[in-house]
Length: 433
Image (cartoon, rainbow, N blue to C red; front, side, top):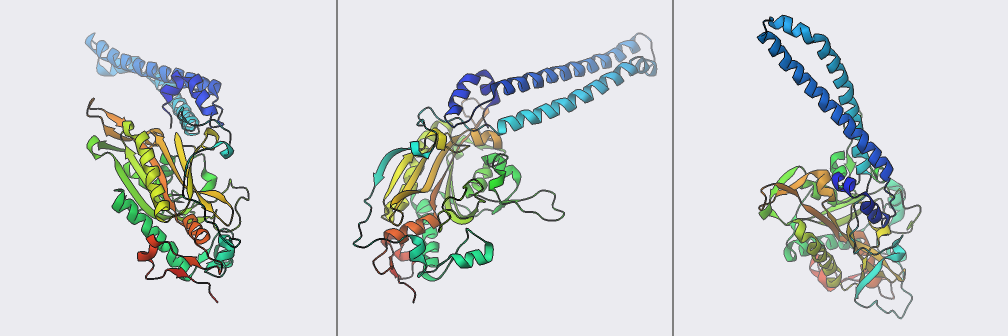
């Protein structure tokens, strides 16, 4: 959430930056709501002051010779009237505060000035490339056609759960597992992340903290159990559970940075995809990901974004998969992100680069929603941390990239050398007959 005081004091500047994200800040509504809220707040404070004055008046009347009972009777009618007014004002104050919070919970994070201008992903800016797309002396197949004889079973997935689910079998399933283990080992052993195992079901407060709720409720899978007071939600990414580990916490500055990683399934309804990528594993309702989360000092978050991007790149480089790094333009930037880099891996079957990791700096946007703070040693006061998250990497899309880049003319998959220790001696996944 943005700092309401900053928005109130700098509405034109905030509105200008939010236009980069194709978001129109309703300044008039905000100012009207703020003015009404503050007016009611002042009236309530005045009525509370009047109650205190009347309470002191009782003591004065007793000092002038009245009995305590006579003194209280003297102000009973006035107190009753004040109590009635105050109750109405406090109810109105609560209602306006809820509307004020809902308003700001719907406003996205400010993009950094360096974020490229643009309305859509077509305006993203390429920063660099690594590797050369492989050349084949045959027409490369995509992962769907390859997978039919290797263990990708979309019919079984649909039979069990409907569209956009898949069953993976045999050595291809082992490759999927090997990729997740390999990614975790690199992030933990080489980049210093702390491995975590977290719940796959979270309460609504966790999703509010990282920004998925209330705005993106339709993208989430929600549980419904008879008699359950509060529903749970399946996590759309381990960013939610990992980042919320510091919710409502005041950290020691020396604890920063906190670097966390986890391998989890992710669940998304893909409500806004409108039929995109319905073929194959590119856009599934359930997929696996190794997530990276960093909790940092505000002065370190810009550098941390660059570091986390290289941590994701390291996986692709070790697997020898060609990719490019893109700086997202404002119109393609996520709700909670101030700046994002996407890694896009080359897929020969599609003859294009496709996103395989997204690394974002959310600055203090999530921290304010979560009240995640550290004690500033210079002032002794709590200050908001900065939070960052990124994929290190999406396991299913990495599986697709390995299949398509490492295929041969027979439709077999040659396992990248970095994965050999994880495959129990298997170096080639042969077509099943």
